Length: 236
Figure 1 (tube, helix red, strand yellow):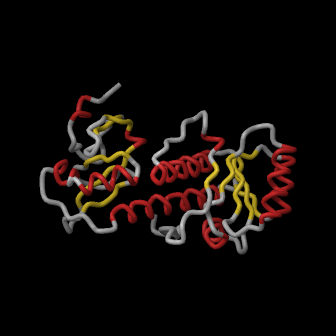
Figure 2 (cartoon, rainbow, N blue to C red):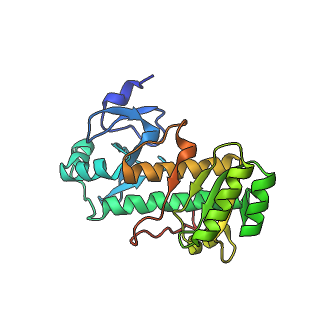
């Protein structure tokens, strides 16, 4: 059901309960889960509000870098805010970095909840005895190690498992609070679900392709370009 205010480009604030909003770039109404909210910061600059909690009225953009770049090019954000707004030159890149950081924060929460298994031997054992939902390989993991664990996954797991190769070993170390993490696995649980949801949101932002519930288990994210560096916000 479309909320009554969904035809307006400017929302009424972070506590609005709309389930759908209009994209200021495409002029189409979409679920808020498929969009990114932007607000104007104290310095007059547009700020991505990924958690939809920042104060002030906001506008919404379809959550892909292509649509966001188009919104910037056509000055759709200023039109949506109905006022002049400063757009940082790296707004697309900055938004992607925030999405990446959210991925690491969610992985850290999964680790703190005891849902992460790390180390080749432990992951291999978990594949034989646990119902896992995700298998993570560091971007620099050896092809031989990846191949062996993927073979173990095929032998022991009769349910689809997401395979992820987007994170470096250093990033896995940071998120999971352990040194030299090259291989890891995630058990089922709400924090793991949050991690996968944020990972798919990042994939959609980069590729423009939305992962549905049916195709989600087949997601296989590979290492992004050298400019990508995931960092955690320890204040969140």
